[in-house]
Amino acid sequence: MRILLTRPRQQSLATARLLHSKGHRVLIDPMLTLRHVPHEPISGEGVAAVVLTSANALPGLDEPLRRLPVFAVGQATAQAALAAGCTDVVAGSGEGIELAELVRARIPPSAGIVLHVCGEEVRDGLQRALETAGYRYERLVVYRAEPATRLAPRTIEALQRRELDAVLFYSPRTARTFAELVEREGLVEQLRHTSAVCLSEAIAEEIRRLPWRSIEVAARRDQSALLACLDDLAAAMIAQHGVFPGRGPFARGR
Image (cartoon, rainbow, N blue to C red):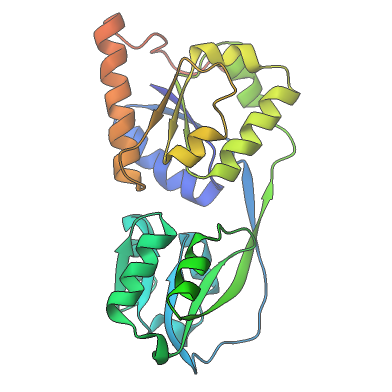
């Protein structure tokens, strides 16, 4: 398949290597660029646990915090936390309520602050669930994600040539940015030949107004489930057409 990756570049490069190993052809056009947000060093005093809702926050995680219990959204973020030197990591789903339940099972409210190390934009379900359960929730912003202001010329060309079989979406903001830019470029109708593969239903809702060939949603909020969803789409395309409708490489740019 010919696939467009829209997540930040560093994560897209890792995913591209995995997709290449499966025989897919990949374009990368990040819809978000990550910028570090500086903060005063954190000693960890008074902090009982750390919550990570994105692996993008790990570069901003101070060393004392890596020795505390870390509750991470998804297996990919949990594995990244372990690779970054965190020693006590629990993986949960993408739902704030479930992650709060995991905290409640291990950390009493009296133990101290639950520190959410995150980007500037977060969903509020986690904070509400923790505070309702009597925890002291604090947020430490360590990065911001700046949206792209236009599609890359190579992406525009691929859409115009109807070369994209699928676009992968990992976050609602990424999907929303892509939808806005496609509309701005007047390329909406070209999506009738492309499928969207989404990590969650919340992401799919951001792009349902566009006329995709199909919208696929992963069974769980982790990359292995997303890629399994992509495999199912590839198998369905082969069953219908005998080969991928556009199985050749991307055309060379002018």
